[in-house]
Image 1 (cartoon, rainbow, N blue to C red):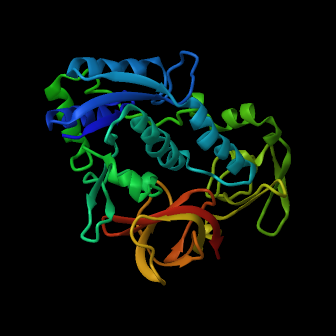
Image 2 (image 1 turned 90 degrees about the horizontal axis):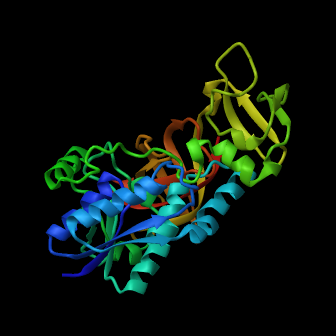
Amino acid sequence: MPSVLVAMSGGVDSSVAACLLLEAGFEVAGSHLKLVHTGGVEHGCCGPGAEADAGAVAELAGFPFEVVDLSAEFDERVVAEYVEDHEAGRTPNPCVRCNERIKFGAFLDRADELGFDLVATGHYVRSDLGPDGRWQLRRGLDRSKDQSYVLAGLSQTALARARFPVGGQTKAETRAHAERLGLPVAGKPDSQDLCFAPSADASAFLEDRAPHLVREGEVVDEGGRVLGTHGGTHRFTVGQRRGLGVSTGTRTYVLEVDAAANRVVVGPGDLLARGGLTAERVNWIAPRPHGPFEAEVKIRYGGRDVPAFVEPVGDAGARVEFRSPQPAVTPGQAVVVYAGDEVLGGGTISGALR
């Protein structure tokens, strides 16, 4: 059987993934990715507790385990761009970049260094080899836990070497496996934190990392009338309703974040609707379409499927027109294109179409 290096976060999903592969006869080793140095503080999937939990599972199951420090790569390939995006007024999803560049980039390089055939994670997605010889990425069987949105940037090379052992089962089944195996993480809750920001306080992290982001600017309505001031555009995202620092007498939302002008535009919710979007850095997992086609798209993690017309533009761009207007199209977030359960591709939202 092939050898497989499993990325073990210390949570129940990756722990069960490793054990299922071991039961199936694979030669398994676990690797805990140290992406940030927390100073001994526990937050998200990072910290001494997560590392200890991953090691305890490996020891119980009886396979080799390591801790590999990828913090320099993570800082360079994920965190630095996260800061740059906020400087430009965008709201990035760092998990997309982390999966593309670290968990299926730098981690694959680590597997090569150690001589492993495959890598595996605890993501709730499925993959299979299509009739055309290309790998297909599909949603996880448990749609409430599906993580295909954050894996749309994977290449054919990465998919060919990746395995997702829990993607074909429900979260309840995963926990049942953990209990059957007596794993110490069987009842561990899911992590929802931004792993590199203590207490998940993104604004505080950005202000510590890039103090120049803290600068006073104007909050204006859609007509340009000044309603108040703000302390930095990085604190705002399109669609945001709370913490705007202004009172208009009606429900008010962020309509636009203009970092170049250091201005935040707010207005009523009905002005959030957009007819579509443009995307950049588009990665096609399926063969690149030759022209416009109908599909479903997701424009935020956990969002619903939106029927749309999708048209590839240039080498790595796309234009998406929704069948019906959608609120809060947010530059910096991912747009992922689906045909049923299959992920066709995805990219980064660069702009909204009115």
